[in-house]
Length: 176
Image (cartoon, rainbow, N blue to C red):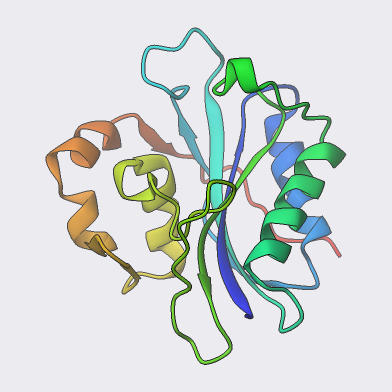
């Protein structure tokens, strides 16, 4: 398996620096990085700082779906994240989700595993994932849910879009 879409989010500390560090650590695999968006905390109404969000398209012929999950967790640990199962949506310096993975033949990887479900089971409901993703793959489809453009137009996601604010003052190009 070679290609993946990773969603990056940060709402603690130097949020932009956490995102840049993640992109730098992925530099050997990064194909393209979305713009940066600021969003209200998740879940809606949470008493937490706003997030900075972005999406990265990565490619590495030696990394499979489980390998992308391991890299995501390594990035989170490097940023100082400590997972607390009792506080699933707690503020965090870095959150990295594996949204989609494609195999070497370009076919989407479909998995129903408690540790790694692909595509991400809630990606189709989250404007903070879909809006930056469409920056880098405007004609993408989310298996089982449809075209990203159509998903952005669903009532649930469209209602969230007002809270997804572009941050053109922030860029995440890798310095490596």
